Image 1 (tube, rainbow, N blue to C red):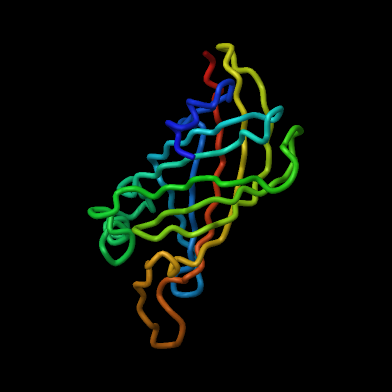
Image 2 (cartoon, rainbow, N blue to C red):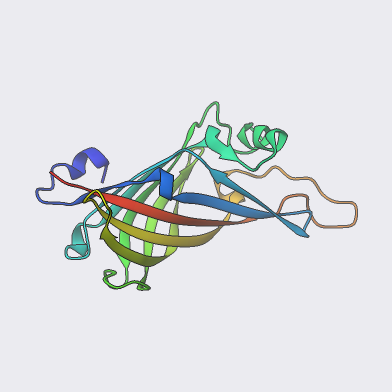
Length: 191
């Protein structure tokens, strides 16, 4: 269901990602021995539903590929190139949540899983996010906020991200398994 379609669901609560208090990070092994970490700095997300109406729950996420940041400009440029994400032709990564597995989170620490379609380049593959509800409260300005964390592991080759180099001593330069983790804070949209 698209974000525009959700506006038609009368009474559905929507929440917008607070990008200043959220992070979306990834990590991958380099030369089979050290972990390289990075993040996407430009992420937008809309969460639908709430703990009292889990049947209306859903999430849509858009990530700007050009916002990738590993702390090394040359590596970031390579990741944006056609060898990996091909940001020129595929500027966005999207995730569309399709269903929630487990009970609706109500208490801090509750765990659940979100199934959804992850689109990278021109491939859409179902993934599962292992999530934890971090809590809900009101900020000093009267807005209601809710926090979640998630993690998953992906095989980058499934989305056509196959570039690699064999190492003389065996193994490969870049691991195929990528860990993705996020700490997300959403603000309820009133009215």
